[in-house]
Image 1: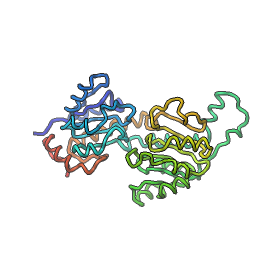
Image 2 (image 1 turned 120 degrees about the horizontal axis):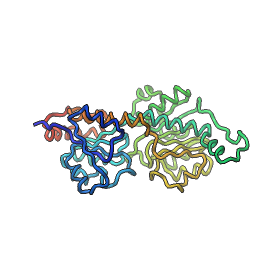
Image 3 (image 1 turned 90 degrees about the vertical axis):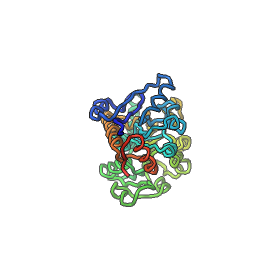
Amino acid sequence: MTKPNLQVAYFEAWQHQAAESHLEQYSEIEAVRLRYADPTEDNLRALAAADVYQVLSNRDELPTQYFVTRELLAHCPDMLVVSTHGSGYDTVDLDACTAAGVIAVNQAGGNKQAVAEHALGMMLSLASRLHEADKVVRRGGFTTREDLLGRDIHGKTVGIVGLGHVGGQVARLCGTLFEMRVLAYDPYLSEAQFRERGAEPVDLHDLMRQSDFVTIHCPRTTETTGMIGRTEIELMRAGTYFISTARGGIHDEAALVDALAGSKLAGAGLDVWDTEPPPPNHPLLQFETVIATPHTAGVTHESRRTVALGTIDQLAAIYSGKRPSRLLNPAVWPAYAERFESLMGKPAET
C-alpha cells in the first residue's frame, strides 16, 4: 500500500517563513519540528520515524550528535532522504548515506545571486579601499586622499575556483559588468561549459599566478579541504586580492596571515572561517586590509525564500518518485530506488 505522506523532520525553523505557507500546497508532506532544547533521545526517536531529515548545512550551528553519520543513520534504518538547508553539506557524511541507501540532496543555486553579489561587493570594496576609508573617517585623523589610493577592477583578471552555480554567476558579472578577463579552475566541467559561463579554463596554479583577484566558490569536500595551501598562496602575484565565500578549511588561514603580513597580498575578503564565527583576536582580523563577514554571503531575504521554497518543491518531487535535481550521491540511486519502493509502496524513477 502506498504511504500517504512523506514525513520530514527538521530542527527549529525552515530557512524562511514562506516555507510554512508553501507547505500548504503539498498535503503529502508532513513536517515535524524538533527542538535542540528537547532531550537528545526524544529527537533521535523522532528522526528514526522520519522519511527525511532536513539538516543544517553549517557545522558550527548544528550540535554534533545530529550530524549525519554512520551512527545516526544506523539509528534510522527507514530514513530515505537527507536534505540540507543550503548548498553546503559539511554536516553530512555522503559515504555513510550511500552505504545506507539514503539519497542526499542540497539546495545548490538557490542563493547564487546573493553569494555572487557578496563576493563582487568584497572585490569592489577591497580595490577601492572603501572599508579602510570608512574606518579613517570614523576614527578621525584623515590626512590626504592619496593615502587611500585605490584601484579599478575594470579590465583586471579574476580567477574563479569552482565554476558552479555561484562561480558561474560571478564569471558573468565580472565579464559583462567590468569586462574582466575571467579564468576558472573546475576539473568537473567541459570546455563547452566553461565557454557557456564566459571563462577560460586553466589549472589551479596558473590561476593563482595570473589573477588580480582570486575568489573561491567550490564546496568543501575531502578533495578541496586545504586545496588553497601555502604553495598556492605563495604563487599569487604581489598586489593580488583573495576572496572566499565558499567554506572554511578550503584555504590555509595561517598562510594567508603570512602573505598579508609580508604585504604580498593587497587584501582579503573572508566570509568563511575554520571556526565560525572567528574569535575577535583572530590574526586575520588584525589587518586593516581584510574585510570580514560571519558567513552571511548567502543570507538575504530573497535567497532564503528561494532556498526554502526550492527545498519543499524538491521534497515533493522525491515523494512522487522523481530523481531530484540536486542529488549529491548519484551512485546510490539503484539501492535507494529499491528501498523507496519497499518503504513507500510505489516505484521511483529508474
